[in-house]
Amino acid sequence: MDDKVTPKLLTAILSAGMLSFLGILDETATTVTFPTLIREFAVTTDQVQWVNTLVLLVIATIVPISSQISLRFTTRGIFLAGITFFVLGLVIDIFTPRFDLLLLGRAFQGIGTGIGLPLMYNIILTKVPKTHLGFMMGIGTMITAAAVALGPVFGGIVTELLNWRWIFIISIFLAIISAFTGTYSITQLNKLQKVSFKYGQWLTIAVGLVCLMLGFTNLTKNYFWSGQVAGCLLLGLASFLIWGKISWDDPAALISPRLFTNITFSMQLLCYCFAKITTLALGFIFPIYVQTVNQGSVSLAGWIMLPGAIIDALMAALAGRLLDKQGARLPIILGTIASLTGVVIMSVCGMHLSNLAIIFLYSLYYGGYGMCFSSLMTSGLTSLTTDNHAQGNAIFNTLQQFSGAVGTALAGTLIALSQSNHQISRSIATVIGAKWTFLVLTGLMILNLVLVTIFVPRKKH
Image (cartoon, rainbow, N blue to C red; front, top):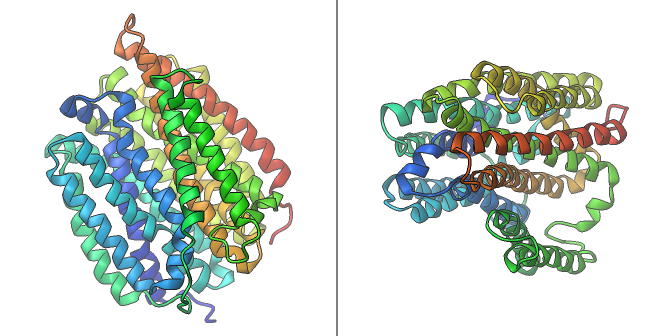
């Protein structure tokens, strides 16, 4: 293998990354438009969060079959299929007159992103020399981090000057450019095989993820022991138990449950999920907080999110360099401490956060997140054998999306619960819901610090 990253390889990584970039760009761009969508479609806070939660949930159900798709279909064909589904969703989003059709379009976008999302990391893990692996994994994370940075500003400016539908119109042009560059640069990663799809295993995973999410989001309107909540949660858990049973002894399992017996892998995966939950929850709260509590504009909400996202991108690249030289433990622990400090201060000062305080605290949190997030994935994957990297990659990407959906739903659910108290104003209810969320996130990040201290290897892989 060549020890350099060639321009064509870099173009392939960026082209595949564009699908992830656009998926996250639209997700973060629409987040700042939630107050606008609530008014235009006459929906509630817990309903509008499905604009993003549904996309993440669809991605989480598609990613588990990515390894089998890559064996049956050409790498370039997979990429173009992802682009096609994504553009179809964009067209529906642009012309939809109803909220349910908007969700349908977003679901198609989720299918496209779910098909293409693992592709960028598979290209990196397969084609990039080991001496550059940490740096290129950081670059891969920085691509998505750039979407996080640009999305709120992009969504705010476009919504204020034009209309929220233009978010999706502009995305179509970027998707077409990516289709051309990807067709040129993306080459086959593996030999094609005639494998039989594991429909039973995939269905049990998909049903488990969907039921857990439905049970969690139904908490806003139903008691815990109701069929809509406890019933969905139990059905989700039962579905995962069935998946474990039918997959355990299958040497060609869609995702082998045996991988979770590797405690180092599993604990770093859990930390990765907690970090994603926290990030998406904060990304949901602050645009609504700025507009509803601090009476800021849509574009202001976007600009306030920008500094933190830029710092996230810079720290992701720095973390890749540190990982290559000193191993994963240093960037992971430093990043976790910084993120924990941010959410602790949010919890203490959560009853009133000025826009300037939000900028500072979001930047502090996001800088730490950039340091630890991609490093957790790289460290977790390198704790597996090379033969299990593809499945490990699928697990990380599946749970990344599901965790993001949980984070969005968590914030939306707690704020909606607070807003259901009609004796207080919507502004005060939003503050209280945000405070509840900050406290939950603080607990998650404390647990994260404990886990990474124990389970991230001290020696460089």
